[in-house]
Image: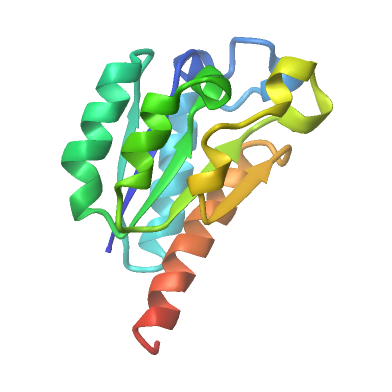
Length: 148
């Protein structure tokens, strides 16, 4: 099983940017946490980050066909990237949308996600732990589908 974990703009600054909102865990630390969790299910992780919408879409189109699940934190693209949403909607695997902060309790413009309607599940406001819950959900769904 392969889980594709994609991170949108500015997430490369995790641990530095607004730690009161996003915490002190770095993107490298988060990647290691996700890899460890996936390994406990016998799954592998392809973990990527880009500040480029087109690069994220390219990865979805190229790598999404080989993924058992996609976990995505679209970051600012959450609120307006219909192109990203369309790319995700073409994937046959389940999509899990993750946000470190609770986007529904922040500024008005953050409260709308154009990605959520194509996601199997959305986890918001639980810090980096939300990524681990998404890994759990993706791997457990695969196990249930295979009668494990």
